[in-house]
Each structure stands twice: as C-alpha cells, then as structure tokens.
Image 1 (cartoon, rainbow, N blue to C red):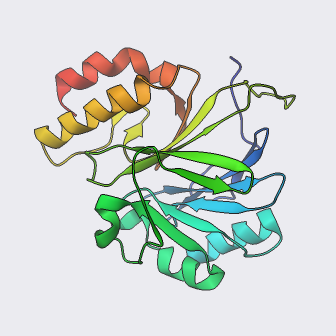
Image 2 (cartoon, rainbow, N blue to C red; image 1 turned 90 degrees about the horizontal axis):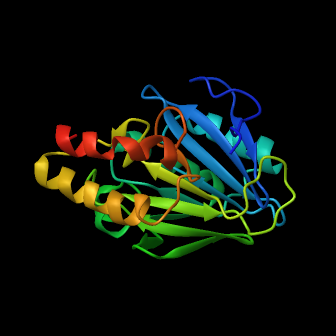
Length: 233
C-alpha cells in the first residue's frame, strides 16, 4: 500500500490539512495548547458535514467550516470522550452552527453540553450518504468512542484502497500505544477492547486518526501489542 498524504499542512497552529477519499473529504486541524486534532468529515455528494471533537479555538474551527463547506452549516459534532481538552470549543460551535451533539453514553453526563444522541457500540451515524460506525473503546474513559469509515469495494479515486477502513480513535489509540488509563483495571479493559474491536476487527491497511499527533496504521502498530501488554501502559 502506498503512503497516504494530506494536501496542506498539519503543523500545530497551522492551516487545516485535507485528505480526499472516494466519498468523503477529511480535514485535519490541530487546535489548542495540547495540539488536539479536530476532524471535519464532509460528504462529497451532499456537502453534509460532521465534526469530530470541537476541542479548542472555535474561531479556527468555524473558519474551517466556512472554507470547506462555503458556510457554517454543520450537522453533527461527535465528542470522542469526556476529557476537557476534547470539548473546549463545543458549546460555542454548537451555538454558532445549530449542530446536534453526540457522545458515548457513559461519558455524556461529564461533557459540558447536552447530548442529542448517546452512542453505543455498533451504532451508526450518517454524514449525508456516508455511514460511520461507532466503536466503543472503554478504558481511557468509560464512554470513549471511535468512529469508522470504510471505503467502498469499487473506487477510482487516486490513492484509494477498496475496502480500507479509516478509524478516528480519540485518545484510545495512538502511534506507539493505547491512551493513558487511570490504573491496571482500566488498562486491561482498554486493551481488551482494542484487541477485540480494533485489531481483531480491522485489517492492517486501516488508517488511524488519533486525537493528538500523527496518523498511523494498524499494520504499523500490531507488532507492538505484546510489548504494550507487558509494560502495562
């Protein structure tokens, strides 16, 4: 598989980067003092959009919406988990756009904006004609969720890989290991979900978009699973 690239930059504080997939455009924007990744997914056919993590800097997020969609129309904001650095701009983005809000059921009461929809494992979300599947990953927080998009079996888009999955993991999976957990029980819970619901359900081509920092693939991370279990973090 050839390397996937963004157009533009992904430098913290810089402009958004764009990845063109077959049915969806993925904008990646690093925001806030912790360099959180905010992802804007736009259906190419309908123009409908979903934002993953309104983390910080609402004006930059709204400027991205304007540049990407020609306006500030946004259908949905998904918050991957309860930690404050992932929803610092949420209230303002919701107020300015009228978007609905969705988050994991077990984290909903700990996020500073009401949830119009609470998410559970195997739920689905629609972005225009694009379907996103919900993958619950318990451990980093009780209600952490990832979202999966799968490229169709037939595509003529350059750099596309038919059937490849794209997984937006919040802080549950990064290059080099799982996200931080509060202790050994939470670590074991997260590793169990990663084993079953991520590495056991998606192949090595799967592209991983974490809540901070660079992308990775499951193929790059899979050989390190025994080392992660042995070190306990």
